[in-house]
Length: 347
Ligand code: NAD
Ligand code: UD1
Image (cartoon, rainbow, N blue to C red; front, side, top):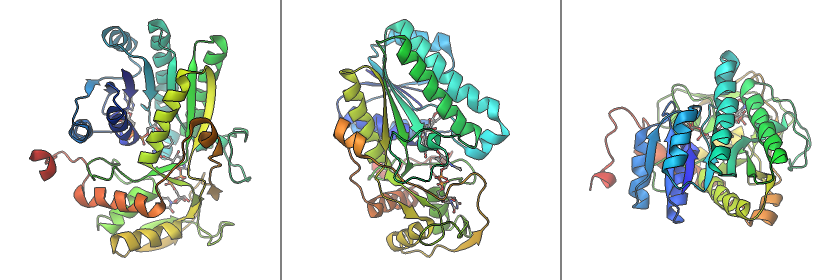
């Protein structure tokens, strides 16, 4: 059985589905601070199999001990965490406590239970502001400009120290580039709280008429059209990478770092045009000053994951946007409180 912390969230829910489809039993631990129980119900529907779900906090050691005692957990995928950059600047302690202390509590409980295989959600943000593209795993980590990024780097360092201290640990640090998209069914996807911080959810809300226009943060970067360039990756490809990592970690030890990206960069303006094409809607935008802390461009060298995991991203930008758009159309308010079960689920 695989314990998936944060399994009700955007990436976690897609990972749980992929694990179930691959035949794994899954236990989800999530405090639902940024997600809905509905995501799990929909995953169960899509997989045709139940998920063991526990509502609780990853920092709760007694709860973790009880879970390891009660379930035959063989490995952990650790998604639980807070991820809003601006919020992390305002509330740094909450971010360090959840993202760093939460990871420590989890590892303590794992060690006590004799479980040493862990897949950790890291981020390309740990590379900081590097100008050499593409970014390979050999690129030294930088200085993330905000507590969120710092917390990811700190958690990585904690996990490295742990693996150095005890050869039984087998840990994958997966550095995500920019996950977007949704499951092709349109039943699970990203459901941000309040005003979205990230480009795709914001653009989708403009396309569907919930917001008037997109603010493009800067068109004076040293990029082909002046807007920021990122490596967007389909969330389903991303979670498939997690399954490969989980398998690989079964026959190796120590810490392994893998970039999860496509290796291709796209600018904000390219994203706008591509979503207009996919959705048939006009996306109004205006150019605003640069967002503090943003870098001009960032894309991955994904070859290490290909050579060591036999994994690479397969879905192109059009598919990412078409799947995201389907999710948005079918769930214009995400997993809202009224939470009507879609017709497909009711039958
Ligand atoms: P998300 O907010 O949708 O999912 C995180 C989940 O963790 C949520 O369901 C939330 O309720 C849960 N959670 C938060 N604090 C918890 C706690 N103390 N105890 C138990 N559960 C808790 O975010 P996501 O986009 O699915 O991200 C998953 C992981 O990937 C996070 O660690 C995030 O930092 C990392 N990551 C995300 C991105 C991205 O662009 N989405 C990029 C790089 C890294
Ligand atoms: C951001 C975070 C990063 C985090 C990632 C996933 C910052 C500085 N970085 O990455 O740490 O891991 O989200 O949560 O916040 N853009 C607009 N208008 C918008 C939103 C974004 O023009 O309304 C632009 C940005 O300037 C950037 C691109 O779109 O060029 C992508 O932005 P975003 O989706 O927020 O991702 P990152 O900044 O790459």
